[in-house]
Structures are given as structure tokens and as C-alpha cells.
Length: 241
Image (cartoon, rainbow, N blue to C red; front, side, top):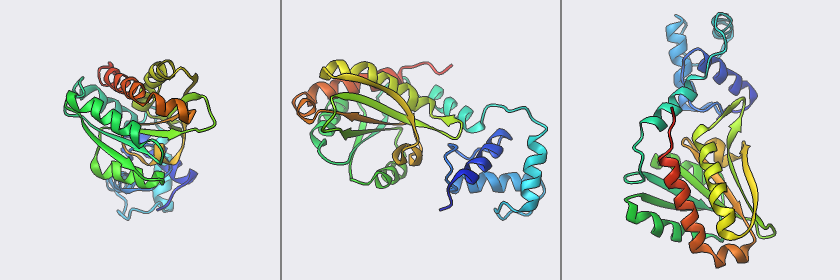
């Protein structure tokens, strides 16, 4: 799979012209290929989809006629959040961990099930494998947990990169940070925009929660599950206008 700054620039150009590549993440996947093919068809160019000289010239020519509007991918993502039901009932949540936090994911699953939430636990040390599973399941939101055995704080990351960020992920990260440090009695490490693989490769709002120390997390696993479920509840009830 092609990836990198050149792909991100292509995605930015396409999205600014109204051709939805999905998240501007620098990965040339099916959504980007489809958006490029749509652009070529609309521009009267051969549909490859390959960014040859003619395609690039047409992209630059048309983009020069437009002021930098909001990316169509951002508009679409916000519309999906706005039109979703303001409840956890019927939502599909993926809760992932790479090792050592199975008791927490299980506690969170037990906490969410009575609300009618479908919860899938993902246990795999490789972030890309977890992202692939979450994408294949078409979950509504991904919440990843990582243990920081030497730390004594909680920090939550969401996707941000290439002049783009996940609005849904950012709000969820902020809500997690309001709930978790107090519940565990640890420091607040903040909500951080990052381009980590698990955040870049998932195709839904996603956050990665890193907590420590291990003894406090294990001891207060039930309280951590309560805090995370509360954050998810506030997130689905948020206004996206």
C-alpha cells in the first residue's frame, strides 16, 4: 500500500475539491483510489486511477480556483456524528489492548452490555492488526488501552496529522481525560493529537488511553471501567452542530 506525504497531499487536494478520500492520513487505500477515479471521470480524464501528469495538472488548475474550503471528509465525518443516535444502545464499540489489560476490557464490556451496547474486545500486540479488525467489523468507535507500567498518569491520544484531525476522537479523548485521572487518583497527562498507527489506520473515531502505574490500574479496574463508560456515554450524547 502506498503511503506518505505525497499521498496526503493528493488527499488534501481531492478533499478540498469535494472528492471524499476519507481521513487525510497519507495512506492510498480504497477510498482514496475511488475519490481519484471519481475526479478523473468528472474531469474527462482516463480513469486509471494513477496520478499522472495530466491528472496532477488538472488537480492544480481546479484547486487554484477555489479558496481552501473545509475538507469534504471532515464535513462527512461530522455529519455522521450528528445523525447518530444520542445513546449507547445499538452502538458497536471495539475495546482493544496489547497485553496486560484484559481485566479492564472485560470490566468495561460488562459495564456497557446492560445499556444495549455491542462490545468487541480486541486482544493483539500489533496495532495494525487491531485496526484491521475494527475496520472489518465496522465498529462505531475504537477505544484502545495501553499500560504504562512506569508511569503515574493518564494520557489519551486521538488522530491528528496532515492538517487534519478527528473531531470525534478529539472530543472522546477530552472526555476520557476528565473522567479517568480522578477515578484512578493519578496525574492528568492531557488529550494529545497524534499520528500513531492505531489512530491513523482505524476508519472510525478512535482514542488510545495510556495509563499507569500497573498496580493502580489493576487495583481500580472496576473504577476505570466506570469512568470509561461514562466518557463514552457523554460522547454519544454530544452536540455536533
